[in-house]
Image (cartoon, rainbow, N blue to C red):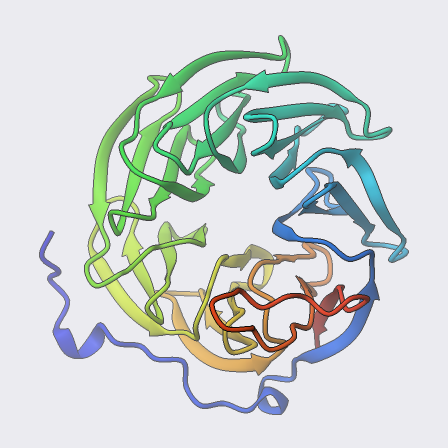
Length: 329
């Protein structure tokens, strides 16, 4: 869809503001066992940080900082969420080919639900009470009822699905990585109602929806595209670093953050109006996902230090270097 906003207003780059001017920096590093990681989410009660790891779900108590490295035992996990008002949690696992429902208190797995080839991001829709699993291998969106602990439907979406956001009114927004677009899904109807084209966005990964109704998609080619969720109009193009994999939204403070693992930066975005970049905080290369503590606004970023890559191989993490960075004022 053609934007009605003058081209001069579309590029809102992250101003070259020093971390000290923003008043934010890495203030703490939480040590944890080595291993891979993916999405980070806060539990529904706002008390616990859930980190999907290569060997299960790790948690951090936001009040005490205590780490439980293995709340849930699982393999190659990607996204973990909990259901408000219940003891039920869900984590997606490529190894299991679906979602594991678990007791959020004990970590005991209570159901193993097959959803597709490559389950990735997870979300909870408060409007329908359904848990949602995004498939990165073209398997669409799986809909799970946490009450019956069963798969109750699927939404066909062509393409590799990445991060998702819900609007609390029954609409699900999902980045389609290989199409540079956002699918808009009516969860109750189990249907895609429209698709928003993210012009100039390559491989959108991270996604957030602000309370003003703006979607922020982090693109692999150094852009964060801002679109109006209702109209689909492109509103802004914010410069970010390389290798983004999440957009962290802090609604109480009208801020969003894009961690970029390629350059070790955290782009800070003011979301009080149309989102705009206001600066970059230096973090650590490799830190590409994270979440915000809703009570304090602190940002939690898992990461590790990497040795130089050998020819034809991916960089390997240095043993003993995994930790969760805490960025705060």
